[in-house]
Image 1 (cartoon, one colour):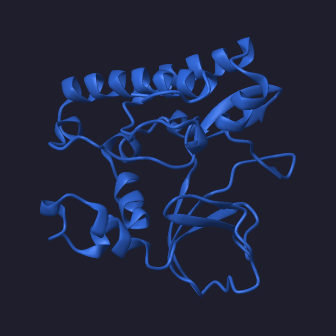
Image 2 (image 1 turned 90 degrees about the horizontal axis):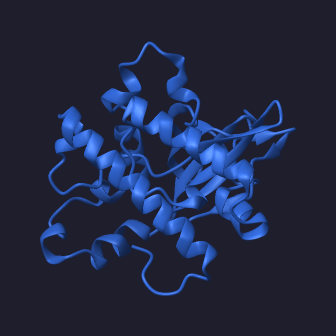
Length: 212
């Protein structure tokens, strides 16, 4: 068991807290917040309330998302070019947790795309990084939920920015046809890319109205 009692989270999302592993400084441990599963279930539409609490657990859903064919099948190591690696589920003093690669630059935790955009705007450098990211998505057809800038971090390799997904994997389609069909996977990926740009432009415009 990993003891997190003397460790403070370096980041906190809506459903999980993120810790640097006390036994591996290159690992991020994601712990589901207490009582959050009950709240999530309570806020869902009536027909989803019959599902188990575990079905709303982001850690278990992340574990399943990393098992998608796009990630497990390729022999090409470039699948990890824009994706934090998955280490597995671990037991901690705060409960079961998901452990992934912690993306760093010079021993500092990598900045999110959201923070970069708010500070620098849509620079030529970041446009190139996003273009490379889009090419990778189309090549590997990695299924993600909506691609939100705070779920992407900037890894600097030889001075060049590379975008890395740290959260939000999975298929959000009600009927998960993209999991089984290349045709629907391609359509799904194009929709995620379009929504990603909608979110980026919404962030940069001062978040007025509905970003979708």
